[in-house]
Image (tube, rainbow, N blue to C red; front, side, top):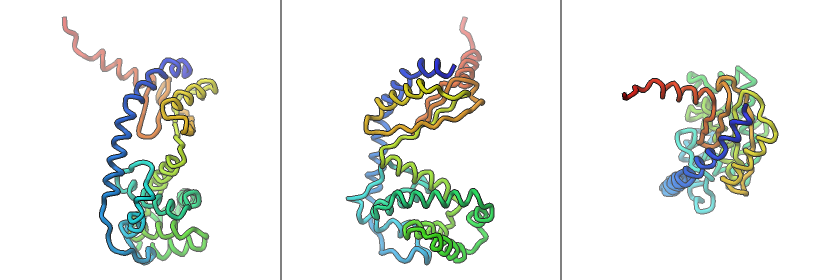
Length: 255
């Protein structure tokens, strides 16, 4: 069933993506331009002593002609992720920082006490900053990651570290030319159909991209498949088609 839906939907997917690609690129370009145009501020101080996000990114803004994020991210978590990316890129430490930020998320998931500490707003700022600095200094983390986590602690944003990490990884993947594609089906996608999907996306996104397919079993879609990557969702599920049919049948009939 999934294979048949995939074969029938691939031409639609290709047409849909081709039609929206130019608009997405244009939007990202505008975001980068506005980011690069931000004025510089004052010199930064020690992050561990309670700096701000603007202070953390100041030294990166001064080098914006050399280092740019591969795609524009918006919102608070996007701003933090972009600042971390630029700092890591400047130090040529993207892989190390990515590994460390993943370790932070992993520790939060494994330790309820650590997770509660990061999310508890009643913990004084000085206590949060000192604890985070000491913990990750002892763990041997790089100065970039330690300073960044200290900024999050100072600004009361540690509770968003998982989402920030996700968006940071999005940037590192884009930097390496990798595109993560999530395919949701009710049964595993056969190897032949997965290969066909990769080839279609490769044609659209370019031969310089590395397509990484992650299959997820989702019985709620009732059949068919849902393809997600970047900000795009292509829904060929039976659940969605059934809803569309129901909506169509409920429309009044002109006689």
